Length: 273
Image (cartoon, rainbow, N blue to C red; front, side, top):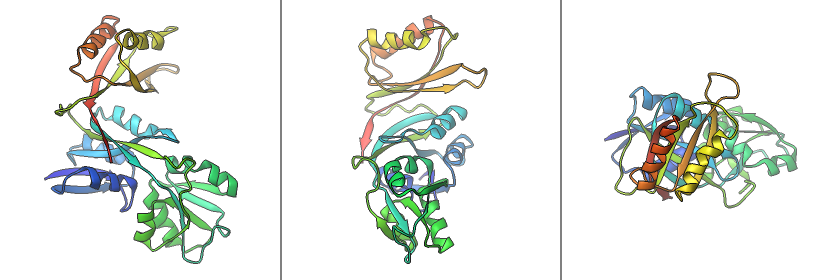
């Protein structure tokens, strides 16, 4: 049995993705925020966790990226999960009675056009499921949650409007996170963290040129503050090359020759659910 953490309460997209990805011999542990989920892995309360890192509409989920770096964790796998968002409310609500919507920030960002069209106010919660729970407990007809169909069923709420995301091809990428580097049988991508040796004009360009020169395609780039001084950044870079790919080995050596600090965050393949 392995212990796996995910963002609760019951009914989140994280829960759906977790139950589809992991086998039955799993002990599930829910936490109230993404940072709590990642901290649980760091503290050894669970063996691994699943957290969202990117959405096709809203972009990167910075709280996941920051937690990954804060707790010095490793990515074991990533998976693509189709997301359908709905406006859900109490039984005496209608789309015309609603004036405020509740949800987690990425979900609200995925429905900006719908929210703007209806001139709804927005309030933020730690998860889509918690938003639905709040709406149910309030028993008010002027507030609604943005969440999944399963959450509506779980809390006895009605769907006021279906598929309200800005793009019908809405996908969220989740990552499986642990404390150590795992080496699966198949590796197709590698995530590395680069701390530049110094801040100078063109430092990011010089780093990216290394991958370009070696013919390594990059699939994801994220810059985050170092926390040491304003204007100083570190870079998470994902590429379509395994950790043991000779090109990746050479890229790391070249970057280290330039005295950049390089750390492998994970080497893995993608699962589409």
